[in-house]
Amino acid sequence: MHDSKVNQTSSSFLYHNEARGVRLQLDYLKAEVKMREHHIKHTIVVFGSARIIEPERAAQIEREARKALEKDPDCPELQSTLKKAGKIVEKSIYYAEARAFGRLVGQSGKGPDDARITLMTGGGPGIMEAANRGAEDAGALSIGLNIELPFEQEPNPYITPDLDFYFHYFAIRKLHFVHRARALVIFPGGFGTLDELFEILTLIQTHKSKPIPVILISKEYWERLINFEMLVEEEMISPKDLALIEFAGTASEAWNKILQWYIDQGDPLF
Image (cartoon, rainbow, N blue to C red; front, side, top):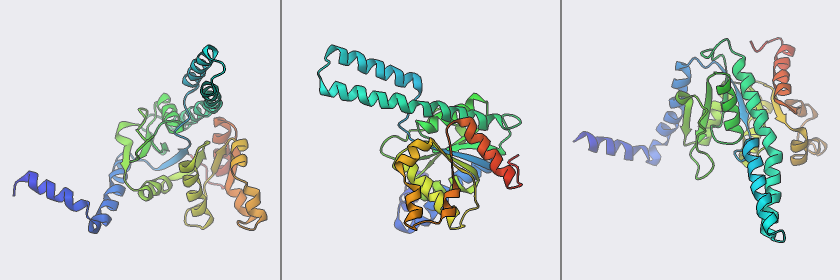
């Protein structure tokens, strides 16, 4: 049999239901091997919306929307567009903070090859891009765990090229998020961000994962979105479960909370 036919047959076999275990293993190994090659020991994981853009671009969008409305001030669609542009500007502050946080993580090492603490994101645009960009600003390695999706999830250009991974299975991607994580920092986001947040909170709550600091950026956003106190009042979670979460308003505050958490545990991060 010719090599091309052998390769075609092997590829076809990998998509059979019976080969799902092999696919899961490959999805895991392709990232694991590379991270070991780069001596990635621990990670700090950043999650957040893929839809948040940098402040300069957000301001430009708002200016364009305002100019368009000035030409036709009674147009409902243009009024709505300007309102949405205002929201984009409001949220762009989180891009700046995520970039600043990525820079703090990147600067924590002793040099560009020091991968003891490495920034990890979901690899896409928005908050993920900002955090990877901050690490690149500091000249540090950073990891992107991308996922095959029909929208939003093109890899951002700031991930270290050799640490830019594509996953087919959400489960394997989540495993890598948790496996080396020493802290989790969550910026405002939607369904995907909530999924990742509650996945890790559940693992910690049920002692499937060791406790790590989980920092939510913008207390106002998160308390408006989720009534954590109500879960306690309704006896859906224990009061002590609220201690799994901390809030921060800025990148530096989040970083300092992480450092302090490990000092309090008697296990300094560095």
